[in-house]
Each structure stands twice: as structure tokens, then as C-alpha cells.
Length: 474
View 1 (tube, rainbow, N blue to C red):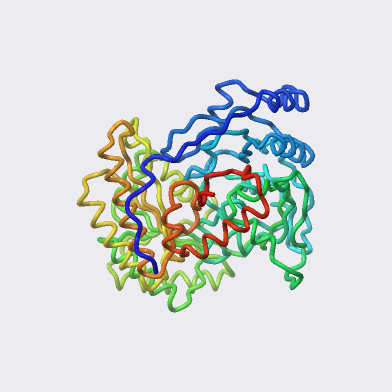
View 2 (view 1 turned 120 degrees about the horizontal axis):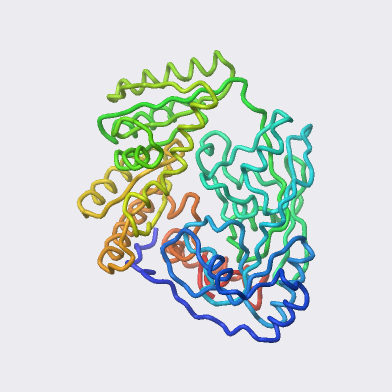
């Protein structure tokens, strides 16, 4: 393990390249009204859910087909101009920011479900299809797509950031569930990676190369993913604890003895309070586990009884069940709104939202010390976590006009990530590197591994036009 890096990236490194007037004219000629240089449109595409402030892109192209994307990339390549893919703008680590200028390619209009192969448990979609839309389209088949990052993100964006979320403990992440891709490369060429077959030994695994590449190697224009049968029985439960430690110890035991739980989410006291106010709920304002069990009726009951026994051994109380779809939806909607509930709890604030993931045996070591440091700082925060796979998120709520609060939040983030790395974990479990975790990538992977990533980037994108300035510098 390399030595932890000092606190850095309090502000992103902005080195914008000039966008030639000739490129803007060519884009206007090709796309007409679907190429916008209006400030409001550019600003909308020049920010995400991170706390960074960066000038917007010079233009936004609204693509409606793979051909549109390929033409836009070819024109940008001819003028050495950066290209930034855009879905719905829900990323958290500055992925969408035009730190080197350029144009944004909005793929949200590429929203067709292209092929549902229910017999093979696969579906192929355009990148602008959102996860909720996909599940609505396939509900009549008795199948569902389980990857649930919270936000109603697009499948293209989820593949690009290797997203996961609340169901990952049972169904895995986008890494395990993307079978094939169509990608427009930095030269404007259209390539396909992978097939609908369940496995393959044919050559390099290019699909995995692009999944998690954060738009730095190409623009994803089609995604083929796995589907799963809807469980015969689903039951959700909440359990409150007198301390975070009790909730964490329960989770560790649950995973170590192999309970096949579908979801297990930790919500701290601060987050419960914020969610109660935001979603008009009356949950106990104590640390809480929100769980969901999938399987046969008998299997679900057996899992639930075992977890209830484990929880009671760590002070768990007020075990409440939600067995109807309406009750479950209410609880999970509240959990998914935790980020926005946090933002609204302090008017005018911005959130530095960070995540780490550690081996399940080290979860308590990492999480409890991080909570103590956050409490001692005096900075408002909330904590939520997909703790079944060792992944958790802090949201530090800061006044964007107070440099001291930003420095405090970054210091807390630095200590949190350094601790996770020292325990055999990663600097980001699902948010991605973007701008915010660039220094930590070197700490985690080592300079040699990051240089190998740069070598791949240079080979596939010699002009450095694909979302430059993200993951690492060139």
C-alpha cells in the first residue's frame, strides 16, 4: 500500500481548451436545433450532483441515434475538442464537468428498449433508458433488472460508472450484469463488445474495460444486461438499534453466516431525522437497518426469523415489517431520498458525498472511527450504507461560501478514504473516481497500475478528447 496522499482537489484543475468556431458551425449544420449553445442549456449540462463549480461546455448535442453520436465524435476529433457523455446528470464525483471545455453529447433521447429476450434473461437498450423505465417495460415478463443506485439513472451512465446500489449484496453490480456493449470510440468508429451468451473466453474482455471507464474511452450507445425472475415472495423490515455499532455487528454476522438477504441498508440517526422531515415519516430517530428478503414464502420467513434473532443479540428492537408493495415502496423511496433530504435539511448547502467499501470483517473498524471523527468536527452530515457488501456513504453538508467548512469536509473525506485503504478496501465502491478521487486512485492502485491505465487511454484516445481530466491526468 502506498502512503496516503495529502488533502487535495479542494477545487478541480480547470484547463479549458478553446472550441473552434468551425466545429460549432459544423455541429449546427449537422444537427440543426439539436445542437444548442444557449447558456441555460449549457449550464444544465455543465454540473452534476457534486459540489464543484466549473464553466459549462461550449455546446450541447442532443443525439437520437448511434449515427448521431458517431458524427458528433468525428467532428470533435477533427478539431481536437473534448467530448463529455451526458445521461441525466446524477453522478456525484464531477464526471460531467467540462474541466477541459468541449461539447456535451446528451444521449437521454436515445431511450428505446431494443430487444427483450425473456427466454435468455437479457435485454438490450439504448443508453438513455433509465432503470425505472426498464423495469416498467419488462414487468409483464415476470423479470426485473435489480441494479438500483438510488437515482433514476440511465443504463449508459450506470455502465460507465460501474454503478451498483441497494441490491448489490445479492445481485452484484453493473460489472457482473453487463453482457455486451455498443461503443463509439474516440475516432468515431462504432464497435461492439461481448455477446448475449452467459460466458465467453474469446479474447480480451473489452466489455469490462468500458464498464467503469467513466466516458474516458468512448461513448456507450447500447447496453445488454442480465435480467432476473421476480421473487415469489418479498418482505421488507426495519430494525432500530441504540447504537450504530449494534447495527453494524448484526450486518457482519448476517453476512458471515451466509444469510441470502437481498438488501441491507444502514441509516444513521441524522439521516433518519432528515428523512422523517423530508418524507413525512415517523421512523424512530435511531440508527436503523432497512432490509429486504427475496425467495419462497418459507425461505423469506426463515431468513427473517434468523436476522431478527441476530439483531436482538445486538440491541435491535422495534422490528417492523412491510409486506405489501405499497409499504415497501414507501420505505425504499424514503431511503433513496436520503441525499435530497440531507440537502434540504440545511438550506443553501451543498453536499460532499463520498463512499468507500471495505471487506465485511473490517466494516466496524472503518465506519465507527469515521463516525466519531465526523461527530467531533461539528459539521452537519448524514450516513447511509449498503453495508451488506461493506459499502457506505457519508454526506458532509457545507456552506459553499465557507472555505473552512469545505476544508473540514475534505479533511474528513481524506481520513475516511485513507482508513478504508489501510483496511484493504477501496477509495470508491460505486460513485467512481471522477475528479474527487483521482489522488486516491494512485494510493490504491499504485503508480505503475495507473500508468498502465494511461497507456490504454493514450492508445484508444490519442487526442485525449474523451471526457479528459477524469480518473487521472494525462
